Image 1: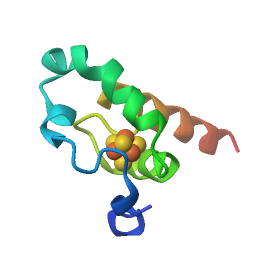
Image 2: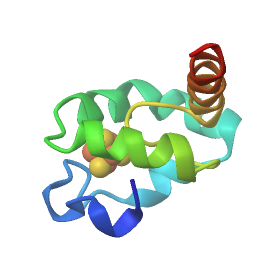
Image 3: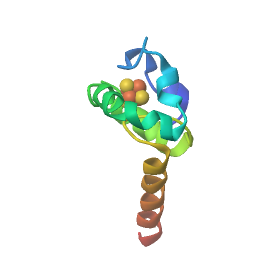
Image 4: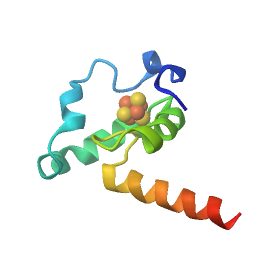
Length: 83
Ligand code: SF4
């Protein structure tokens, strides 16, 4: 999914200081529970996750950290290889 295919206008994080989503990893950890709640209520969560897993290596997107998205990418590739 490409960036311009996501309906960002509907994002639950719209209007929120997006710097919070891009804090240094250690610094951002304390905000993750709050950010996860926002993402869990987001009407475009699935699209955001699909976009972010394949395109974003930094920041907190769709309730996932960069490491969590890396694991999702790896497991998806393993499934594709096994198919
Ligand atoms: S899932 Fe989270 S990061 Fe993605 S658009 Fe929604 S609120 Fe923003």
